[in-house]
Image 1 (cartoon, one colour):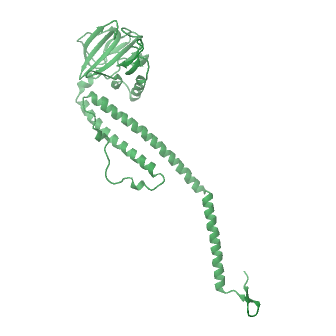
Image 2 (tube, one colour):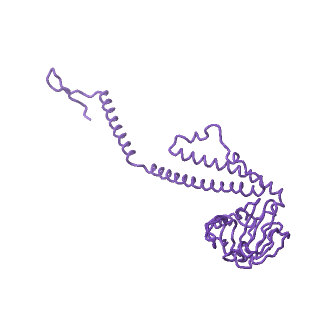
Image 3 (cartoon, one colour):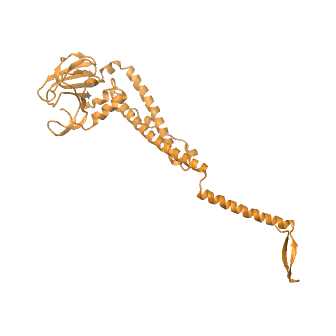
Length: 323
């Protein structure tokens, strides 16, 4: 930088050489620093606006990954909630019905949550709504689990006090799994194989070769032994007590007599094709308090949870009945 500057003198009508002072140097320095600062700020702003740093790209990838995991967690929570609802339905409509008790109170299954806003610390962020919904769903499932645990505690107490009743409940399949050709039809509306009309199939058909053993599904007394040319053909009805009866139809041979006491697992006859039937099979019904109910709900003694779900799926499909 030059040490002098020139200034016009209007009195002498010429330029004069004027030396720079320290204040001039200071002002000039401030100007250059200010200019450099403006250029630096503009450069940083442009870079940050139009270019991503490696750290920012890494953070964006992490956020994208966490968003994906959050969506997966939400989906898994929906599945858990669905399974828990099915357990609660089975509890109310099957287990408690078996013991003759009222369903677990709905206000205890769905307890409310009062008080202050427990999610206030989660608000104000980009993903607040999703996180809050996930937390609320998780909290709801936790409350349901606590209620279901208490309900099962009550059922265990009922079970300990009703040993005789448990022995009488039709709680096994009437035909061994290894003997089955297939489960031909379950409980529900089906097309009748002979009359070709849609009607309620009030039991479950088990297809197996003629002569396959048929077992009593619970302790009880034989109250009916019939041999007909049509309808159920050769059939047996067992009264188990506690409002339960079971029907075994289309048998080829009957091994019991009216008034005979039988135990769960005892062979009462053989599979056949008698009466109104289009193939060897057992038509099996469960009657509770005079109403025919879905037998599939009662196979909890000899089926694992996985096998039970598979049986329900097979029996609920709209397949062809054999009678």
